[in-house]
Amino acid sequence: MTPAAYVHLDLAAARHNLAQVKRYAPEHKIMAVIKANAYGHGIIRIAKALAASDGFAVARIDEGIKLRAAGLLQPITVLQGFVCQEELQLLLQHQLDTIIHSPQQISILLDNPSVTGQMTVWLKMDTGMNRLGFKGSDFQAAYQQLLRCTQIKQPINLITHFANADDLLDNKTLQQIEVFQQAIKAYPGESSLANSAGIIGWPNMVSNWVRPGLMLYGCSPFAGKSGHDFGLKPVMSLHSRLIAVKHVAAGETVGYSGVWQCQTPTRLGVISIGYGDGYHRHTLSGAPVLVNQQRVPLIGRVSMDMITVDLNSQPHALPGDPVTLWGENLPVEEIARHADTIPYTLLCGITQRVEILERPSLTV
Image 1 (cartoon, rainbow, N blue to C red):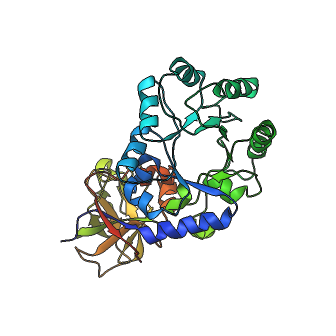
Image 2 (tube, rainbow, N blue to C red; image 1 turned 90 degrees about the horizontal axis):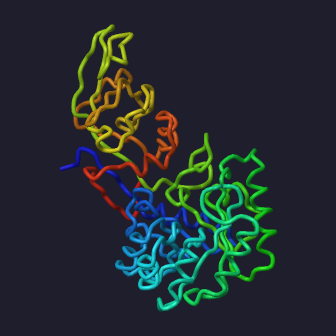
Image 3 (cartoon, helix red, strand yellow; image 1 turned 180 degrees about the vertical axis):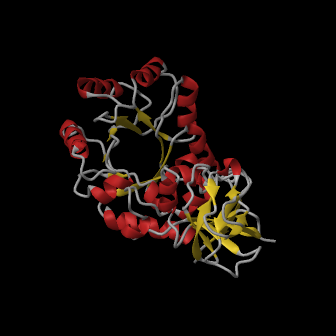
């Protein structure tokens, strides 16, 4: 029996997207970002699909431990680092690399010289994101302090993060690149700057590693574009089915609060999906939905378990017919615009009741 709401994952598309990263950044090592359960795609399956990566990046220590337990041997960098001695010990125990971004972390290292083991660290420079990392002379001082930490492998690696790389008209990215590259000239460690937007939009920066995230899942990091524009393929497609077809008279309203009123007699379809599955509640009427691979508009408010669509253009559609909410031929970036959000939110928002159907390759 076909599930009411389900996701198809095309792992061949993930491998294709990794190959595209290599095409955009041929001289770089690739640290594949698979945090947040690989942007909702499943951290273990995506890590195994992207085994050709030089390393992985996760947000939190528990994500890294999960990868080690699954047998992944590549370098794994914890982007949020650690906040206490116990977490430092976990990093060392599971051979996880870490970001150093605060004085408190350095104090933990210096105050616990008896903690055994060594790990690779990335010292983070704040070049304008103003979130994590050290600026100016504080960066230089942090580097010198880390040279005294017995738990750290030398040389120390160096990293920063872009704030506005998805805006190609904003000079802030060039300023961040200049600040970073000038500051690290005297240091021997490897360096990393670029996220997905940096890889595609700012190809001339000099570094050893890139950190692709969104593009690995087939999405564009730039507003108004889809992954297809950059040779990427969607890994996730979201599906459901029609469960009812009915006729609604002109002047009648549809759904909660009556936000949609039929201007003409309407053949209405009810689809078994809603915000309880991860289809964004604020998706606006007019958003495209594929019914039998043909576009029809969403009408009315998204409810927990159902949405409604206008089937006037599909007089032969019947309950049980297949529906695609996003995927091939319907980019998730387009749906995100109709929901006034970003693709990350939709991909990460799929809930536990949605069944995951994994295929090595898929044509939707």
